[in-house]
Amino acid sequence: MQKLFNFFKKNPFILILALILVFFTPQSLFAPGENRERAIVIAIGLDKNEDEYEISFLTFIPTPNQEFKQTNSVVSGIGSSISEALLNAQLTLGKDIGLSHAKTTIVSEKMLENDISPSLDYLSRVVSLPENTVFVCTNSSAKDLLKATSSLEENLGLKLDQLISYNANEVYVSDTSLEAFYQGYYSEERASIIGYLEYVEEENSQSQSASGGASDVEGDSANQKDKASQSLSSSQTEGTQGEEKERGSINGQSQILNNGEAVLLKKGKKVAILNIDNLNSINLLNNKKSLDCIKINQVKTEDDKTVDMVFEVKNKYVNIATKIQNKIPIFIADVNLGLKLTEIDTKGQEVKSNTQFTEINQEIASKIESKIKIEFSQMLQILRENKADVINVYDTFFKQNRKQFLDFYNNLDDKEDYLNSIIFMLNVRLQPDG
Image (cartoon, rainbow, N blue to C red):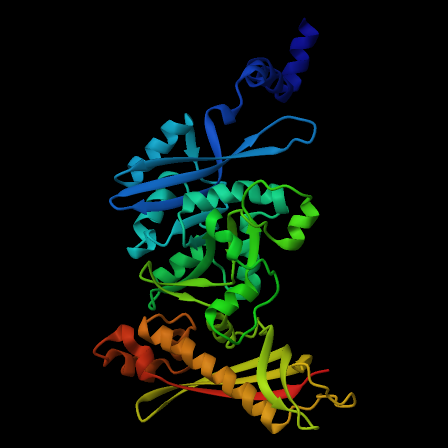
C-alpha cells in the first residue's frame, strides 16, 4: 500500500486520471444520447400566412442499420410571432432545437414583402442560426421546399446546399450566405443578392421542362426557363436512379426548378427577380466569371446563307475606371472577351464546308457588342429603378475618386438614387480565342 501511495505521490497526474475514469466513465456510458433531447436541424424554412408565421425544420435522425442511412423529417410550428412559432415547433418535435448545423435557410417570397432582417436576427441570437448558412428564397412555401428536399438526396444524390453553392460559384459569383446578406444589408447601398428556387406543384409539373443544359442568353424569359431549368424530382418515383438523373424529373411529380435566377433585395425586402441575362450582365464586370456563351442570330455567311451562331467566352479581362467630369461621375468599364465559335445553326440550309467562321468580322462583332450592351442596359435599369447597387459602383468611386465623389453624393436630394445620376460607359473588345 505504501508503494502505491508513493507511486501516486510521484505521479499525481495518474491519480487524477484514475479519479476521472472512476467518477465520469459510468455516467458517460449509461447517459442517454444527446439526440434524444436535442434535434439536429440541417435546414430551416420561414413562411408567413396573413398574420401568422410558420417555422419548419428539416431534421436529421441517425438510424443504425447496415448502410447507416440518415432519416430526414420536416417538422413545423405556427404562431403569431417568430418566437411563438419556434416554441410550437419545439413542442411538436418534443425536443430542444439548435440551428448551429443548419446549412440552408429558406424563406418564401411572402416573408420578403417586409424586412426579413429582424426575423433572421432573432433566430441568430436565440437559437444560434449560423452566419454561413446558405440563404435562399422560393416562390412557394419554404415548408414545401423542405419536404421536397427530404427526398432530393435519395433520388438524385444531390443536397440542396450543394445545388445553391454551385449557383453561388458559377452563376451569382458571389456568396449567398446569411453573412453576405448582412454585409449588403448594413452597407451604404443596403442591397444584396440571394439565391432563388422555384417549386412546382405536382399538378403543374407535367408541363415543365426537364432540361439540365445551360441557358441560351437570348429570347424571352419563358424560353430561358425551359432551356436553363435544372429540374429536380422532389418525391419518391419509380424507375432506376440513373434514369431519373438523366431526365431530371418524372412527369406527374413535384419539382424543384433551378433556373439560375436570383432575388434582388433592398433593405431586407425583395424588389426584383433577376434572370440569367441580368446575372450575366452583372458578372460582366467581374473578372472571376466568364459568360458561358453568347448567341447571335441572322448572320450572313460567305456563301450568302443566314445562320445563328453561338460563341463560348474562353477568357475575359475587365478594367474599371472612374472619373468626375463637370461634377458628373462617369463609370467606365473596358471589357475584353476572347471568343470561340462552338455552334452554328444552319436552319436546315447547306453551308459551304470550307467556311471556318474563325474570324470575328464586323457584322459579328457589331451584333455581339449590341447584344451585350442592350442586356447590360436592361440590368442597369433594374438596379436604378430599385436603387440597388449590387455592382459596387459606390465602393469603386469611393476608392478611386473619394473626395470628388463625396462632394457629388452629399449634394444629392435623394442619396439612395445616386445610380440615376451616374453616367455608365461600356466598351467591349472582341478577339478570337482558339
